[in-house]
Amino acid sequence: MDDMRIELRRTTLSIPSSSCEALLEQLANRESLSDVRDVRDAFAAAANGQPVQLTDPQKLGLRNVISFWVVEMGGSYDDLPAGIHALRDALQDDLTVVGFPDDAA
Image 1: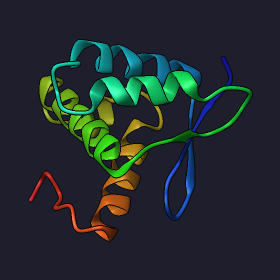
Image 2 (image 1 turned 180 degrees about the horizontal axis):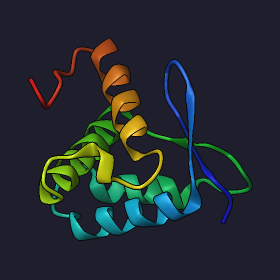
Image 3 (image 1 turned 45 degrees about the horizontal axis):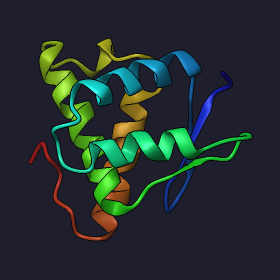
Image 4 (image 1 turned 180 degrees about the vertical axis):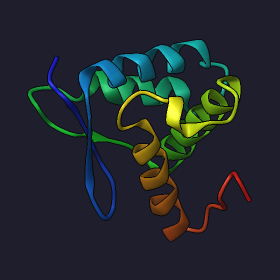
């Protein structure tokens, strides 16, 4: 698996395939959260090097999964796999544009 690209309003972010696999595992463990199943489907639908395209609710669900993941790891973003902290921040920036509050606020 090549690096996974996630398309956002202002940028397209790339995360290593190993980080993507860890993220997909987190998504699988949290399917009860709103829009998480749809996020997994969006990652699965991205084929042939095309970036993952997410709706705003899917972006919010993904941001929330990363936030829960950090809490479970003791609250340090430094312990996340490569690129996941940057993805969380980029998701938050993208969501702020449309009025979603920061989950850390």
